[in-house]
Length: 79
Image 1 (cartoon, rainbow, N blue to C red):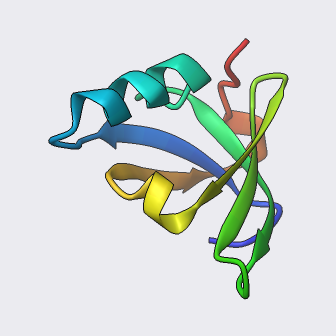
Image 2 (cartoon, rainbow, N blue to C red):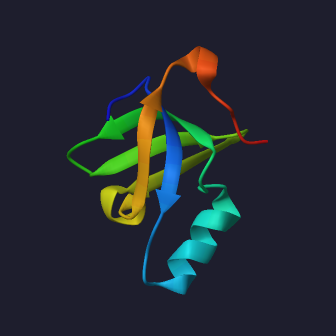
Image 3 (tube, rainbow, N blue to C red):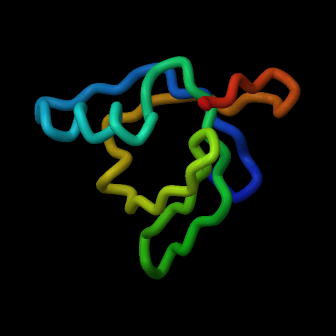
């Protein structure tokens, strides 16, 4: 995954109900397309756009989210 890509979230799976609630609260749910704005490998930190929000999460905070790259013209962006 690299900056400029758009990803459609297909599945959110985790054994921790708190993490699932957190993803839902910030809009990281199946069916939503997010934009990867940047990735800082030394910090292991992604900056992503979810609807009108910009969120920073590390790889560990994204583990359990599964998706696929989409063409920007096919994207369905969260509000």
